Image 1: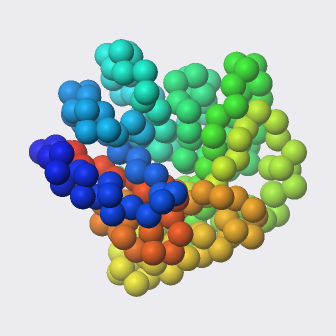
Image 2: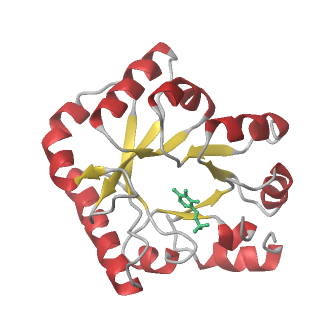
Image 3: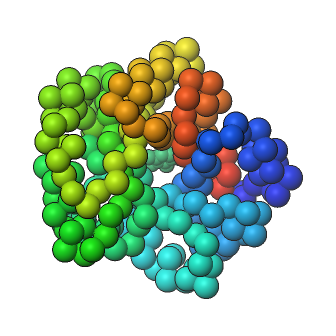
Amino acid sequence: MLINSNDFKKIKNSLPLGVGLLAVSKGHAQESIRKLSDYGQFDFGESRLQEAIPKKNNLNDLDQLRWHFVGTLQKNKVRGVIKEFDFIHSVDSLPLLERISRISKEEQKTPNIFLQVKFRDDPKKGGFLKHDLLESWPSIMSLKNINLIGLMTIPPIDLNSYQRKEVFCECRSLADHLGLKDCSMGMSNDWKESIDVGATWIRLGSLLFGER
Ligand SMILES: *Cc1c(COP(=O)(O)O)cnc(C)c1O
């Protein structure tokens, strides 16, 4: 069930200045997005292009909404995602980033980009390894038509809250090292830990929308 407006405001008001709240609406109906926007929520995250397009079309009277892509991005979806989304949180390889850069130029867009980094071994998740990211950094810096704003990470599911916080710390340090302002990290079960160590975007799904 969708969170009520009081509980939403409690969460929103507890966030430090500079921490953005992304409402991850994947799997939830457009009516819930509309209600959250009545509460004053304007950033929404979707993980599948095919699901996002009809929702966006049905909500296009709400011109304040900003759309964030948070899912695994397949090569053949890059153009569609660039056209439909303002932010991409889940760029997980150099070839994918190069493709985004090339197609963004064609589409005359400059999407806001987070690079997804994998700080622990996790076969279920994609992402740059830290070492590879550092090695690719000069190539990354030379790419046009992308606004590289930060790093994104998702700790493996089996870590405890202390271990998750360690991962978030490593993400913040690497972002600082690279001169990137933003860290997209923390979800419904670990957003407080992520904020403690420097998240600038938390991504909440079930806490806001209820279970899918
Ligand atoms: C679904 C999803 C979320 C939200 O997860 P919850 O645990 O429901 O808050 C956050 N980030 C990504 C990348 C997701 O796919």
